[in-house]
Structures are given as C-alpha cells and as structure tokens.
Image 1: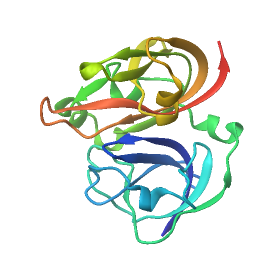
Image 2: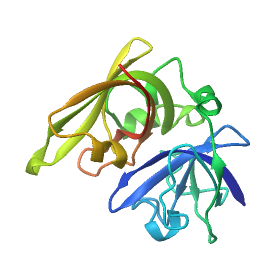
Image 3: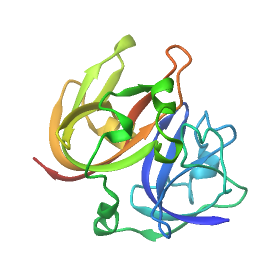
Image 4: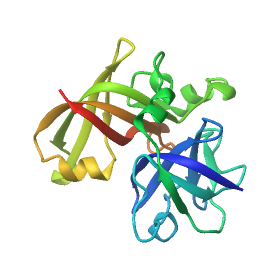
Length: 213
C-alpha cells in the first residue's frame, strides 16, 4: 500500500541514505527500508525526478505492512516496487505537534544504548525515531583520519545530550572547527547495533533550523 510521509530525515547511511518521516494519516513514524535494512535506501529508489526528498516534503511511497529488524526499529517498513511521488510540502505548524516534549530521548541520555538495555524496554514502548524542538549548538571536530564530524549539543526536559549529526545538508554547510547556535527541529534516529560493542547509536538524522540564537 502507499503511505503519505512528511519527510523529517534524509541522512547518510553507508553510501546510501536513511529516510524517515511521519505518516500524514496516522501521525506515526515510518522508516522506509530497502532489502535487509542494513545498507540504506539507494539513490535510484529514493530520488524523485532526480532530486532528494527534502525535509518537510510530503511524498507517496509504496510500503509493506512489515519490515526487517522491527524488534529494534519498530518503525521499519519494507519498500515495495513502484515510483515515489512528491505530493507537496508540510508546514512547520503541521509537524511541530509531533515533537516529544517530555521524557528520555530514545530510552536514555547517552548517545548509544546497549542491545540488552533496549530489549529490557517493553516492546510496545520501544522507539528508534523521535522529533524534538531544541536550542542546539551545532559544532564540528576532527575524528580519526582527520574527517570532520558535526554534533548537536542541547538540553531536553532537564537532560543534556550530545549526538552526532548525519544530515548531509548540515555537514556540508558547517565548516570544520566552528560552532553555531540555532533553534531547531531535530529528528533523532537509533541505528542497528554494531557487532563490535553490541550497542545501537543515536544520530541526528534531520535538522530544520528555525532561528539563529
């Protein structure tokens, strides 16, 4: 069946992208996944008339009712054959209602959660996507092999968070060793576990800057 999604994440995943958004009719998060769900969505599938789905675009996507890894990412839905269509654009007023205002962001205050800790959360309460409004400091630093990494530092419901940003638009426009503050809508995504430490890591998969601060 087709779903109408308000796109709130289009982030790096391997050489592809992780796409996620809110189902306009149900108000629930949906993450379209390709194949086994580990490699992201290829360009040939996700692009519409040669363009990336932009944040706040409303698109029509053919999706199954189920998907892989839903014990960890319950929002996953397998992509079915068929074209993606852009239907229009959502307003900020339409999406801000989906912001989480209270509680921990994806189950703890850390940038990662162990698989055992995640599986201790009742299955009906697990989530791997959320949207928050925050006054965030977006800053860059060098990581191994001198690669630039952008992170977002912010407070939410009395807790401090510092989470890497994988939104390519923000990565491309944030120079190395700089920082800026802005009021933002941040889409936070929890990835699949790494074999090396059996932990799932959080990423800021979409940034909508509202105002500099």
